[in-house]
Length: 111
Length: 118
Image 1 (tube, each protein chain N blue to C red):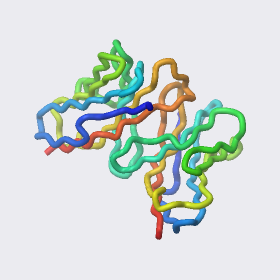
Image 2: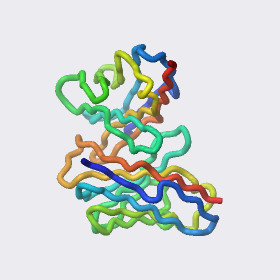
Image 3: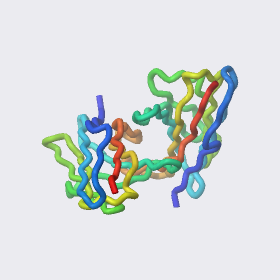
């Protein structure tokens, strides 16, 4: 069965520091992978997605993610975190037209 | 573009009453809408998939008689929690998939509805 694991429940980084959020998936075929951000009072917003081609994908707000098939991973990165990046981040795998979400990682940003 | 709204944003009700939550796609037509439930500090769990003009498809373990879903138009889906009990208290999120989208296209999410059953 398809599944998504985000091993870090929460991560705290200092503003300006780099960030990496981990995501591992289990899927039989080539997965469609997504990263979403959830801020209070707002719907989940798509940061980036991967379904084929270049394994390093660029997204909005300066985020990028790298698909590594050998490690079944799709980690999200940002070189320099801003205070406004504090939010909940969800990795998801697409199964047909459905999405299966990981448990989320809450990002806290220290001033 | 691609805005999804939910109403109400929060609701408190008494145990045993029914509550209706609306999900609207404001600037696109959505042939498919999804309803999720999110427990505190947990993931989004898909409850059901609704297709315009047809019956909803419920995920395993979701009581279809308790969570009634109606998708009567291309811009509106409703979730009715019938005979609500405290254990139904949760954050309910809808999403909408535009017509003619593919599996690699994203869904667009509403801001969610916080339901508290007393």
